[in-house]
Length: 131
Image 1: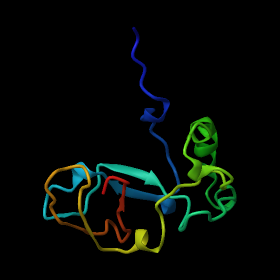
Image 2: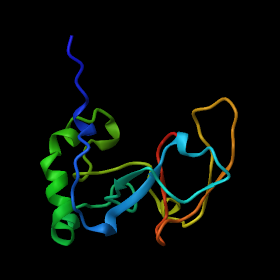
Image 3: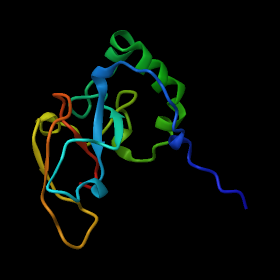
């Protein structure tokens, strides 16, 4: 039987406008006392849940083209959180997401360890839903 990697692991190299690109941390990144360098990056399309995303097409055409190219991945999300929401919506985003300093705990391990999350290049690091 052939094993196929899910389409969202394309590992493409693309050039995108920097303003919507943020470092993102996963639970496994929260092992040290502090962290200020992410292993991964994400496109943050909204400052709060439900915010309109039409601005991306006009202000960030490279990001818009990239997201549009992969529209079927967004359409395949099964969570009800995305129903009747603007295209390219994200969840778990709000004012707290953009605070420069955070204290984070991994939600994936039996013991917890507090990690200070520092900004990178004057931008806050984002946390995924396991942090």
